Length: 314
Image (tube, rainbow, N blue to C red; front, side, top):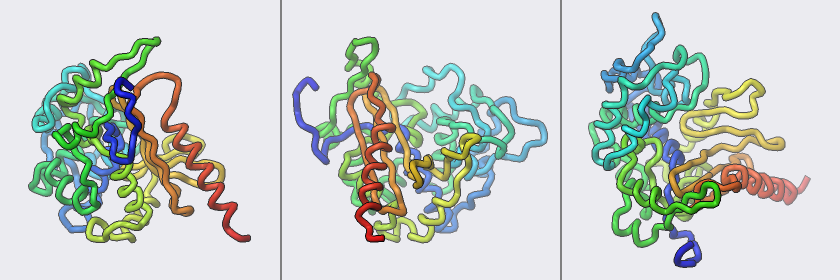
């Protein structure tokens, strides 16, 4: 905005909760490699999960897959949230551990869908423990690098900084660049659930992988396809749901899979339609205002799917 530079496929944005599908991919990799099982209790890898408050009497321990599908019963955030939203990336695990006693169960595990940011932080910590590797190192070496995502990271290193779009917040007509700039210093516990920086070009490689066109050493195509059948309803009319790291939304006769993301100064959405083998990515360096990135992304994807279907001979 200040420099009037035109964005390219190499422009870097923060993508917020689109980090969650990558953490879910870590889970699926470790399952495929025999390191963990979806049904493993979280306490096996992270005993401090038992510091969460208001556990339902008689309820079984929560599992890895319940964290991944937002059915663990954990609340969305810890109380005193701002306390746990500061700190560099290399301290995120300790910040998360400090937050656990300020988290409560909202309901009995595996009985309802409830979006939980702290749940995905717990998942990332548990998987890091299971893999015996720091979360950021694992993601870089086992996911980003094999997928060719060379402009993706969890911190604004010099390469990221060189291509980073300046983030702006907008509220009541006032433009704020200070808050987004400050958050580049770290988001506390929000690393496995919302710390990634990436580009349209790199994110397109991830969507192609989800469509079945990526290297199978990352994850077998059969495993990817099977994962999209694992969806829990998120509302009563079955129009939306949540799977292992993705939202499922029904649109005009087809289902789209993906995620939205929101960080101070940035909004993002990335969705695919597997049957039509197409995807859509929208990244924006403005947070707030009337424009809804996810709605626009889904509308654009619907137009693309309808065009693809119209081109198929009947």
